[in-house]
Length: 280
Image 1 (cartoon, rainbow, N blue to C red):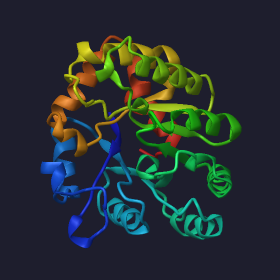
Image 2: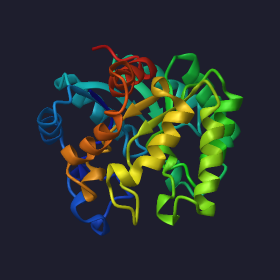
Image 3: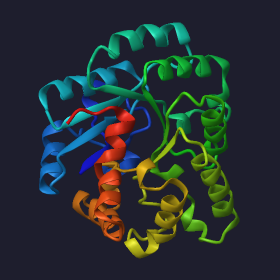
Image 4: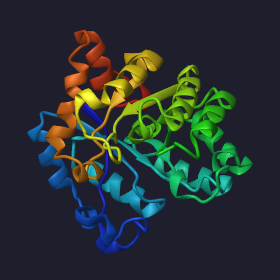
Protein backbone atom coordinates (compact mmCIF):
# COMPACT_ATOMS: atom_id res chain seq x y z
CA UNK A 1 0.00 0.00 0.00
CA UNK A 2 0.85 3.69 -0.26
CA UNK A 3 0.35 5.88 2.79
CA UNK A 4 -1.21 9.01 1.30
CA UNK A 5 -0.81 11.16 4.41
CA UNK A 6 2.40 11.28 6.45
CA UNK A 7 4.14 14.20 8.18
CA UNK A 8 7.70 15.07 9.12
CA UNK A 9 8.97 18.05 11.11
CA UNK A 10 12.11 19.37 12.71
CA UNK A 11 11.31 21.73 15.57
CA UNK A 12 14.97 22.68 16.04
CA UNK A 13 14.76 25.03 13.06
CA UNK A 14 11.70 26.95 14.25
CA UNK A 15 8.27 27.14 12.65
CA UNK A 16 5.35 24.82 13.46
CA UNK A 17 3.68 27.47 15.59
CA UNK A 18 0.72 25.20 16.29
CA UNK A 19 2.98 22.66 18.03
CA UNK A 20 4.01 23.06 21.66
CA UNK A 21 4.51 21.28 24.99
CA UNK A 22 0.75 20.88 25.28
CA UNK A 23 1.00 18.28 22.52
CA UNK A 24 3.02 15.92 24.70
CA UNK A 25 4.86 13.25 22.74
CA UNK A 26 4.40 15.14 19.47
CA UNK A 27 6.57 18.00 20.69
CA UNK A 28 9.81 16.71 19.19
CA UNK A 29 11.28 16.24 15.75
CA UNK A 30 10.13 13.39 13.52
CA UNK A 31 12.53 12.61 10.70
CA UNK A 32 12.77 10.37 7.65
CA UNK A 33 14.71 7.54 9.29
CA UNK A 34 12.02 7.00 11.92
CA UNK A 35 9.24 7.34 9.36
CA UNK A 36 10.92 4.92 6.97
CA UNK A 37 11.23 2.36 9.76
CA UNK A 38 7.52 2.62 10.58
CA UNK A 39 6.55 2.18 6.94
CA UNK A 40 8.83 -0.81 6.42
CA UNK A 41 7.59 -2.46 9.61
CA UNK A 42 4.03 -2.35 8.28
CA UNK A 43 4.92 -3.38 4.71
CA UNK A 44 4.01 0.05 3.34
CA UNK A 45 6.07 0.63 0.23
CA UNK A 46 5.83 4.40 -0.03
CA UNK A 47 4.18 7.54 1.26
CA UNK A 48 3.04 11.03 0.36
CA UNK A 49 4.54 13.67 2.64
CA UNK A 50 2.03 16.37 3.60
CA UNK A 51 2.88 19.84 4.87
CA UNK A 52 2.59 20.57 8.59
CA UNK A 53 3.46 24.27 8.48
CA UNK A 54 2.39 27.14 6.25
CA UNK A 55 5.97 27.94 5.26
CA UNK A 56 8.17 27.39 2.25
CA UNK A 57 10.84 26.05 4.60
CA UNK A 58 8.65 23.10 5.52
CA UNK A 59 7.98 22.35 1.85
CA UNK A 60 11.65 22.60 0.90
CA UNK A 61 12.58 20.30 3.78
CA UNK A 62 10.14 17.66 2.52
CA UNK A 63 11.50 17.90 -1.01
CA UNK A 64 15.02 17.49 0.35
CA UNK A 65 13.88 14.33 2.14
CA UNK A 66 12.31 13.11 -1.10
CA UNK A 67 15.67 13.52 -2.85
CA UNK A 68 17.33 11.12 -0.43
CA UNK A 69 14.54 8.63 0.27
CA UNK A 70 12.90 6.65 -2.55
CA UNK A 71 9.95 5.75 -0.31
CA UNK A 72 8.78 9.37 -0.63
CA UNK A 73 6.53 9.12 -3.68
CA UNK A 74 5.07 12.63 -3.52
CA UNK A 75 4.98 15.87 -1.55
CA UNK A 76 1.95 18.01 -0.79
CA UNK A 77 3.54 21.32 0.11
CA UNK A 78 2.57 24.93 0.71
CA UNK A 79 2.59 28.10 -1.34
CA UNK A 80 1.25 31.56 -0.34
CA UNK A 81 -2.19 31.08 -1.87
CA UNK A 82 -3.38 34.45 -0.52
CA UNK A 83 -0.88 36.21 -2.79
CA UNK A 84 -1.39 34.96 -6.36
CA UNK A 85 1.72 36.60 -7.82
CA UNK A 86 3.94 35.09 -5.13
CA UNK A 87 2.07 31.78 -5.43
CA UNK A 88 2.74 31.68 -9.16
CA UNK A 89 6.45 32.37 -8.68
CA UNK A 90 6.85 29.73 -5.97
CA UNK A 91 4.79 27.21 -7.89
CA UNK A 92 7.00 27.64 -10.94
CA UNK A 93 10.03 26.89 -8.79
CA UNK A 94 8.65 24.05 -6.67
CA UNK A 95 6.80 22.27 -9.46
CA UNK A 96 10.12 21.69 -11.19
CA UNK A 97 10.68 18.96 -8.60
CA UNK A 98 9.09 15.76 -9.94
CA UNK A 99 7.68 14.78 -6.55
CA UNK A 100 5.93 18.06 -5.79
CA UNK A 101 2.37 16.88 -6.36
CA UNK A 102 -0.02 19.14 -4.47
CA UNK A 103 -0.65 22.03 -2.09
CA UNK A 104 -2.27 22.36 1.32
CA UNK A 105 -2.97 25.29 3.65
CA UNK A 106 -3.78 24.91 7.36
CA UNK A 107 -7.23 26.46 7.00
CA UNK A 108 -8.32 25.18 10.41
CA UNK A 109 -5.68 27.40 12.04
CA UNK A 110 -6.85 30.50 10.16
CA UNK A 111 -9.36 32.65 12.10
CA UNK A 112 -11.29 33.51 8.95
CA UNK A 113 -14.19 31.20 8.16
CA UNK A 114 -14.24 32.41 4.56
CA UNK A 115 -10.60 31.78 3.71
CA UNK A 116 -11.36 29.36 0.87
CA UNK A 117 -13.69 31.89 -0.73
CA UNK A 118 -11.25 34.80 -0.85
CA UNK A 119 -10.75 36.00 -4.44
CA UNK A 120 -6.93 35.86 -4.29
CA UNK A 121 -7.05 32.32 -2.92
CA UNK A 122 -9.36 31.25 -5.72
CA UNK A 123 -6.98 32.79 -8.29
CA UNK A 124 -4.09 30.79 -6.86
CA UNK A 125 -6.11 27.59 -6.85
CA UNK A 126 -7.05 28.07 -10.50
CA UNK A 127 -3.35 28.27 -11.23
CA UNK A 128 -2.83 25.08 -9.26
CA UNK A 129 -5.50 23.32 -11.28
CA UNK A 130 -3.95 24.47 -14.55
CA UNK A 131 -0.79 22.58 -13.60
CA UNK A 132 -2.61 19.39 -12.68
CA UNK A 133 -1.85 19.66 -8.96
CA UNK A 134 -4.29 18.71 -6.20
CA UNK A 135 -5.40 20.84 -3.25
CA UNK A 136 -5.77 19.23 0.20
CA UNK A 137 -8.14 20.66 2.82
CA UNK A 138 -7.43 19.61 6.45
CA UNK A 139 -9.82 19.40 9.42
CA UNK A 140 -12.66 20.98 7.46
CA UNK A 141 -15.54 20.44 9.88
CA UNK A 142 -17.13 22.49 11.31
CA UNK A 143 -15.86 25.77 9.85
CA UNK A 144 -14.70 24.87 6.37
CA UNK A 145 -16.55 21.81 5.09
CA UNK A 146 -19.36 23.82 3.48
CA UNK A 147 -16.78 26.12 1.87
CA UNK A 148 -14.92 23.06 0.59
CA UNK A 149 -18.11 21.91 -1.15
CA UNK A 150 -18.49 25.33 -2.79
CA UNK A 151 -14.81 25.35 -3.79
CA UNK A 152 -15.06 22.02 -5.56
CA UNK A 153 -18.33 23.02 -7.24
CA UNK A 154 -17.09 26.40 -8.45
CA UNK A 155 -13.63 25.19 -9.56
CA UNK A 156 -14.49 21.91 -11.29
CA UNK A 157 -11.06 21.82 -12.90
CA UNK A 158 -9.39 21.55 -9.45
CA UNK A 159 -9.01 18.19 -7.70
CA UNK A 160 -9.95 18.82 -4.06
CA UNK A 161 -8.81 16.28 -1.47
CA UNK A 162 -10.67 16.19 1.86
CA UNK A 163 -8.21 15.06 4.53
CA UNK A 164 -9.41 12.86 7.40
CA UNK A 165 -12.97 12.60 5.98
CA UNK A 166 -13.36 16.23 7.04
CA UNK A 167 -12.94 15.36 10.75
CA UNK A 168 -16.46 14.06 11.49
CA UNK A 169 -17.73 14.83 15.04
CA UNK A 170 -18.39 11.19 15.85
CA UNK A 171 -17.82 11.81 19.55
CA UNK A 172 -21.08 13.75 19.65
CA UNK A 173 -22.97 10.58 18.72
CA UNK A 174 -23.76 9.01 15.37
CA UNK A 175 -27.29 10.46 15.39
CA UNK A 176 -26.37 13.87 16.79
CA UNK A 177 -27.06 17.22 15.14
CA UNK A 178 -23.33 17.89 14.51
CA UNK A 179 -23.01 14.52 12.77
CA UNK A 180 -26.09 15.32 10.67
CA UNK A 181 -24.45 18.59 9.55
CA UNK A 182 -21.19 16.82 8.75
CA UNK A 183 -23.04 14.10 6.83
CA UNK A 184 -24.98 16.60 4.71
CA UNK A 185 -21.88 18.54 3.66
CA UNK A 186 -19.84 15.36 3.23
CA UNK A 187 -22.43 13.95 0.84
CA UNK A 188 -22.62 17.27 -0.98
CA UNK A 189 -18.87 17.22 -1.46
CA UNK A 190 -18.82 13.60 -2.60
CA UNK A 191 -21.45 14.35 -5.25
CA UNK A 192 -18.87 16.40 -7.16
CA UNK A 193 -16.63 14.46 -9.58
CA UNK A 194 -13.47 16.39 -8.66
CA UNK A 195 -13.82 15.50 -4.96
CA UNK A 196 -11.60 12.92 -3.24
CA UNK A 197 -11.38 11.90 0.44
CA UNK A 198 -8.75 10.36 2.69
CA UNK A 199 -9.38 7.60 5.20
CA UNK A 200 -6.91 9.13 7.63
CA UNK A 201 -6.73 11.08 10.89
CA UNK A 202 -9.66 9.21 12.46
CA UNK A 203 -8.35 9.18 16.02
CA UNK A 204 -11.28 11.35 17.08
CA UNK A 205 -11.71 12.96 20.48
CA UNK A 206 -13.75 10.83 22.86
CA UNK A 207 -14.03 7.94 20.41
CA UNK A 208 -12.31 4.54 20.73
CA UNK A 209 -10.19 3.72 17.69
CA UNK A 210 -11.62 0.39 16.54
CA UNK A 211 -13.09 -0.90 13.32
CA UNK A 212 -16.47 -1.36 14.99
CA UNK A 213 -16.63 2.25 16.20
CA UNK A 214 -15.40 3.69 12.89
CA UNK A 215 -17.75 1.55 10.82
CA UNK A 216 -20.45 4.26 10.38
CA UNK A 217 -17.81 6.60 8.95
CA UNK A 218 -16.38 3.87 6.73
CA UNK A 219 -19.79 2.91 5.35
CA UNK A 220 -20.69 6.56 4.75
CA UNK A 221 -17.41 7.22 2.94
CA UNK A 222 -17.62 4.08 0.82
CA UNK A 223 -21.20 4.78 -0.22
CA UNK A 224 -20.51 8.45 -0.99
CA UNK A 225 -17.18 8.18 -2.81
CA UNK A 226 -16.66 4.57 -3.83
CA UNK A 227 -13.18 2.99 -3.81
CA UNK A 228 -11.97 4.99 -6.83
CA UNK A 229 -12.13 8.28 -4.89
CA UNK A 230 -10.89 7.13 -1.49
CA UNK A 231 -7.28 6.75 -0.36
CA UNK A 232 -5.71 5.48 2.84
CA UNK A 233 -3.40 7.50 5.10
CA UNK A 234 -1.83 6.96 8.49
CA UNK A 235 -1.49 10.62 9.58
CA UNK A 236 1.77 9.68 11.34
CA UNK A 237 3.08 10.98 13.72
CA UNK A 238 -0.11 12.81 14.80
CA UNK A 239 -1.80 9.41 14.95
CA UNK A 240 0.66 8.18 17.59
CA UNK A 241 -1.31 10.11 20.20
CA UNK A 242 -4.04 7.53 19.67
CA UNK A 243 -2.25 4.35 18.59
CA UNK A 244 1.05 3.03 17.22
CA UNK A 245 1.42 3.22 13.46
CA UNK A 246 0.82 -0.49 12.86
CA UNK A 247 -2.44 -0.36 14.82
CA UNK A 248 -3.56 2.80 13.04
CA UNK A 249 -3.13 1.12 9.67
CA UNK A 250 -4.42 -2.23 10.92
CA UNK A 251 -7.82 -0.86 11.91
CA UNK A 252 -8.28 0.66 8.46
CA UNK A 253 -7.15 -2.55 6.77
CA UNK A 254 -9.70 -4.49 8.81
CA UNK A 255 -12.46 -2.39 7.28
CA UNK A 256 -11.00 -2.55 3.78
CA UNK A 257 -10.75 -6.34 4.06
CA UNK A 258 -14.47 -6.59 3.35
CA UNK A 259 -13.94 -5.38 -0.24
CA UNK A 260 -12.85 -7.19 -3.37
CA UNK A 261 -9.15 -7.25 -4.26
CA UNK A 262 -9.70 -4.65 -7.00
CA UNK A 263 -11.61 -2.32 -4.69
CA UNK A 264 -8.94 -2.64 -2.02
CA UNK A 265 -6.21 -1.86 -4.55
CA UNK A 266 -7.91 1.38 -5.50
CA UNK A 267 -8.02 2.62 -1.90
CA UNK A 268 -4.60 1.26 -0.98
CA UNK A 269 -2.75 2.63 -4.01
CA UNK A 270 -4.74 3.39 -7.15
CA UNK A 271 -6.50 6.56 -6.02
CA UNK A 272 -3.33 8.12 -4.65
CA UNK A 273 -1.39 7.29 -7.80
CA UNK A 274 -4.05 8.88 -9.99
CA UNK A 275 -4.85 11.93 -7.86
CA UNK A 276 -1.25 12.89 -7.11
CA UNK A 277 0.26 11.60 -10.35
CA UNK A 278 2.71 9.36 -8.49
CA UNK A 279 5.36 7.34 -10.29
CA UNK A 280 6.02 3.94 -8.72
